Image 1: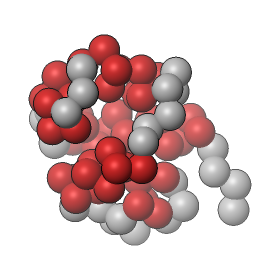
Image 2 (image 1 turned 90 degrees about the vertical axis):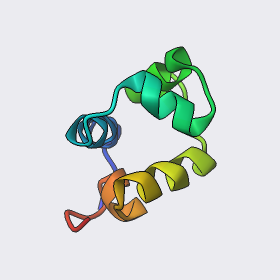
Image 3 (image 1 turned 180 degrees about the horizontal axis):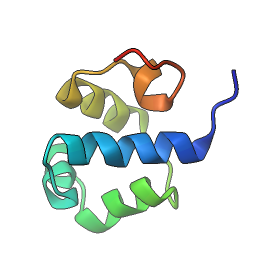
Length: 73
């Protein structure tokens, strides 16, 4: 299975929006700036592994789902 970066970025944004969170709120959760988080969502900067784990825990989804490898949360 091929990982499409656009799917991963869309899923990251969709999960945030589904949880009614702003970029600033997620950035605070991750201990980073809103500007840096926006760069993660746009794919300008790679999302660090520690942030991936934090977001999966926050949204209660698997990393496979977050990254687009699975449709099962």
